[in-house]
Every structure is written in structure tokens, then in C-alpha cells.
Length: 239
Image 1 (cartoon, rainbow, N blue to C red):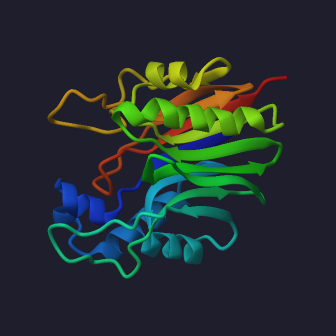
Image 2: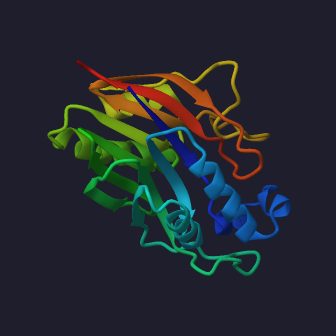
């Protein structure tokens, strides 16, 4: 059994472009970056997937976690400020996997219909781990099909998919196809992406498995660091 976690840490440019209270809560982005890094460093998880990681955030994670294996995929799209000047030295955006054992990169790509969404797959300790950020709306099914293709095409018996899927658990599992299952998020816990308006699901960050079971999911309070809350779960490979 291993503990895994996933968290969309919110790229600063997206936060400022789309509104919300994070820029007001954290006017100094360097302070927020340090606080996010400290939160990640204290997360109980052998495998941690992060989405919307800025270049500045990635550099801080690498400095603070020299004993961890950190893999990153940089998107071809660089977020562009629309409302205020960027507070980042490096505006690039990344998917990140943080492992407590060495890993071998299997795939790293942006989805063909969205240069700001993609997947990063790494083989470590006998399993395949994939971090992903999936588009909302009509592009999602094709992206999930591509993710499933990468995972099922690998020889690994056990796979763990972690990320922001921009859809509810049932939709994600159905669109990934046979053989995939998801950790049930607690009904009495907070949503993974709290919203006060709109009809989109508020439970869109998931731990998905193939050839394993996932249980004990917990949604933790991000405490104002991001518009998403971190998710942790236990993964047990099938015998």
C-alpha cells in the first residue's frame, strides 16, 4: 500500500486572469510559492502530482526537496497576463511528479487540441504513475482516450493516474474505459474545487487506478493557497 496525493496549485497568471481571491490573499507571489512548497514538503505521500506549476514554483520545489525525484513536463503554451503585469520571473507552466524513489519517464506531452493541458507518465517502484490536467468540455473525452492509450499501452500491471480531470468521478472513469477505477471522495468532506457560481462539478481532482484499488481518500483544506484543495488516497496493487 502506498499513499499518493494530487493538487492543482494554481498558476499565478491564471489566478490573476480569471479573478478570485488568491491574488488578494497573497499579494507577494514569492511568499505564496514558499508556502505551497512547504505544504508539499509536509504532505504525507510517496507520490505527489501537481498541476499549474509555474517555473518559479518548480525551481523552489527543486531547491527545497533535493532528496526527492522530481519530474516535470513544460507546456508549449506560456500563460500570458491579461489584467496585470506578471509577478513571476518564469511564467512557464508545468505538470510535476514528486517521487520518493527514482523514476523513468515514459511519456510527456501536451494534448493535441490544447497546448496548456497534458500528461506526464513515469515508471517508479513497479508501477506507472501519470499526472494529468484535462480540459473541460468537448475536448475532455479525446484527451482521456489519449491518457488511457498511454497507460494501457505500457507493460506495467499497476497504474495510478493523478490530476485535475475537470469532471466528476463517474464521468472520468466512464470515458477512460474498462479497467479503470477511482477513489471515492468523502461525501462529508470539502469539494476539491470549491465554487460559488456555475453548474460545473466541484469534485474534479481524482486518484484513478488500473490493476489496483484506491481507497481512504481525503480532501484537505488548501487554506487559501490555491483554488483547489489537495486530495490524498491509499493505493494497493492487485495481488
